[in-house]
Length: 114
Length: 110
Image 1: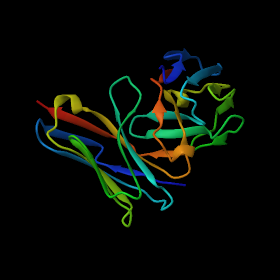
Image 2: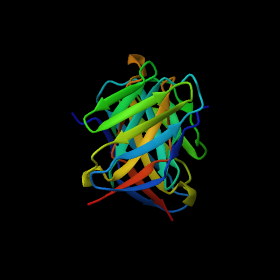
Image 3: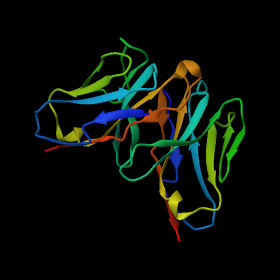
Image 4: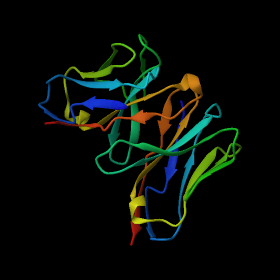
């Protein structure tokens, strides 16, 4: 049982380049999330998808887009990367319909924008 | 939206001592409060959680308490061990979204 799988694990981008972070879960969860983690700032929600076909902005959505491709997959796209987007990105999934059960996290993608 | 504050940001304890991490939240609609442990280079993992209809929950050396009136909840780790060294996050959830505190870096000194 893989849980939540993120790719890639590491990435270096030049300012202005684009890339897509991939996330897939095999737990049949309805909700999926993208967070970024920066030193001293905890985990901040970028985008959230309550179910297939729906997405909502979180706390820090500027500069990002998302796609909930199907129930399993939720991708995060940086159209024009900026140094301020250097961070560790985590994807997570949960099933709130079953009463706010825990969120399961992937291993993270460490992104550096130079 | 929800605002979760977490203290302290760093905590050092001697092996065998207890560690306490405290969080407050702002939204009275939040009803689920998980605690996550994050080891270096890994994603956060749930260690214990509590729902708003419960005041305290224990799991071996770990316990969580919740005071709904005061909107605060705490993590207690007893008999700390070196492997407890990690970053701990509290979170609050009400409508499917999770709002995290800024984390506590716990160091257990052998």
